[in-house]
Amino acid sequence: MADQTTQEYAVQTNEMNKAVELKLCGGLGRNKKHGAHMRAFWASTISFFMAFVGWFALSPVAIEVCSSIEVCENQLYPPVANPKRVAYLKFKAVASGKKYCQYGKVGDDSKPENCKDVPTDTWVQNCNSVPQTACTRNATLTTSKDLCPEKCRKYNFAVLPKCVCSPGTHCGNTILTSGIASVGITIAVRVMLGTLLERFGPVNVQAGLLLFGSIWMFAATGISAEWNFILIRMMIGCAGATFVTNQFWCSLMFAPNVVGTANATAAGWGNLGGGVTQIFIVWCLFKPFMSAGASADTAWRCSMIVPGALFVIIALCMKLGCWDTPMAPRFKTSDTGKTSNASLWDYVECLKDPRIVIM
Image 1 (cartoon, rainbow, N blue to C red):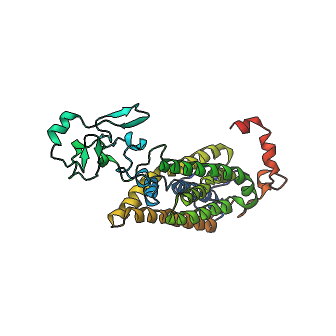
Image 2 (tube, one colour; image 1 turned 45 degrees about the vertical axis):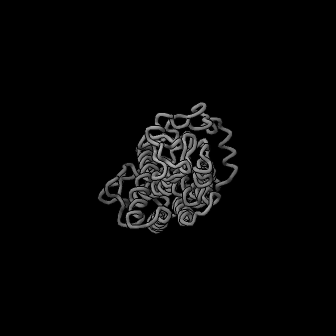
Image 3 (cartoon, rainbow, N blue to C red; image 1 turned 90 degrees about the horizontal axis):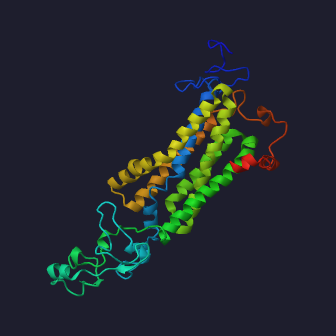
């Protein structure tokens, strides 16, 4: 093992120049070679973390996006003209507990046909002075609370949010489809990434994924229809493949005695980005933009610019400040013991092992 006072790396290494310690505090070194190991660790972790923030960035504001592109159930089917839509009949406000069918439903709860009429005694006590052009016991003809008080409403339009987007609605299906597309493309890119990593190295691949993702993050600010919402969310999903680079890069840098800890730590902190997104996008971007006077439509669009810009900054820092391996700026397949270049045939060979297919 190299003497720490004379070693050429900022961490202790073995005879293969792989780190035998995970030095979380410090270890970035005086230059790219001296700090190769911990620079790779932090670059792979931070890029993976930020990629997950971007990947899930549209999720917490998906309802706002649907409202902007007008695919909400109550935008496609105005409640007053379509009071018996199943999505409305089933609706119950989470905060207040109030129901759209406040006097009960006609039919089964899972497949209601209508709301029950306002009870006669309730109508007599509270609604005799209400004009019949506003509401009757068996119909609600206005959304105005002044013309038709809440107790007089067969259909309680007031409890409906600005965007009804429950499962089974066009809006709900749009979000579901975008989510499936986003995960589906990630799986495909993760499979392809093995060959790309061997051909171009982890720095180029990780930086490339972030730069590609940044294009679509910026494009998200211009979402105008459901088809481009689905397309853009799918393309951003490519950034989810940064997990593969994260693990591959750490494996090149750390020795067997610590590589498991390095991989687990880098992957765990990286995955945390998916949860942080819920706080970061809503409470650090969307709501502050709203507080500054922006409309909801403008606020969520501006919120997409920030992760897109961070993608570019991290990619540039990684490209300018990191090496693929402890010994060279660029990875070669011989570094892993392989005697041949990367090939698509490698996938066929791997798939011959049933354990790989199962996993």
